[in-house]
Image 1 (cartoon, rainbow, N blue to C red):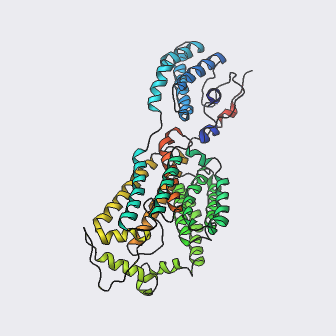
Image 2 (cartoon, rainbow, N blue to C red):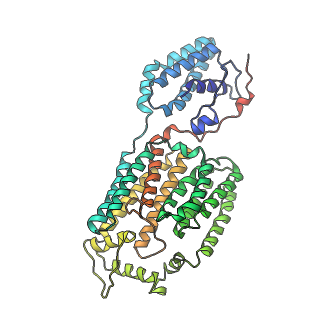
Image 3 (cartoon, helix red, strand yellow):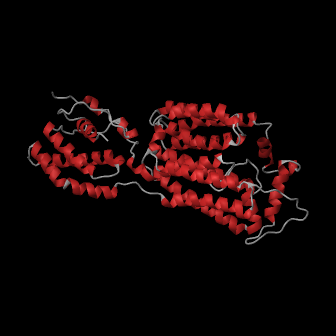
Length: 473
């Protein structure tokens, strides 16, 4: 980390560059000469004072093992030294003496660095990691020991691969998602339009789309109504890329992408009037609903939409399954196996009806136990999302939480007899493999946000005041 360049730029301009704020990349600075005060009134440092501050802050950062926190710590320490220097100058001391006294007041560099090293470090997310792995193990246990499903071997294989992918994402730097979001978005459109449709059971990878879309919204910070339009363009392209896939992909991403846009507008992320922003996204979202209904008017999903509340309208098709599910759980008890309805036909239960089978065989209490665990998991991650200071971290984590929560909701109502769409229960059912891998990957990136997000400060925007600085040669 070229910390000297960070400090030189900070001492010259009063705050870090855009690259420092958003990507933790350091713009090169070729000059360390004395400058005038900027518009905030910060006085310039003489070159020898400049070197003393840089050397002191570098000594502090050398004691801090978490490199990602160096930029923020360097800025905070420099602010502290400048404030102390200004105080001593006001007491009548010359600048060189004031800087020396300010550094002395700050304490021994090695001791301060060791103290900061104990405070500034990644936050392990072992509770959520163990919870995620626990859900995977629960799904494998149910699949093998309760249902004797012949696909349990594949479930174990994809479960182990998914855990590996989650750990890789967890130990990765989530800020890579914000570096080339438009390039990733266009690549995703190409892949989901031409490649995914020809692969078997690959529609589960559509769960990655909200994670791809979130960084695009992040880059539109304070872009005003243009930012909303650009985000809508990206949203539309990703929606179009799902047209050759089962309708559940468009339903799922359209719901989550729309919620992300609404959240961004209400958060004031784009800037401008919130009411106007809501109106700007309302019309395209309404058009998307119309296109969805029109495009899938003859599909099985469209019939499900009509049969959610009136399954008896098609007792020989999708309505038959819905009626049998409702009859079966209607005879369930709180604990133990329920009563089989009279003349009840044999239904072949599969992973899409795992909760239905659990309700019938073990009672409502077992069902509520699984649902409670999922709600607690979602609640914990949602609370940690709200604590994120990083804009990128917030949108990445909230996109994952919405993806997880919407899947859970759709899966639960499906198992209660409201056959809106078939979708996997995240982490618990394997969804043919790709869905489990996608869920593990996005959860890994979300946990990466929680682990290192405190060191990322991309909400700040670089000041333009440095343009008014005049160098003294």
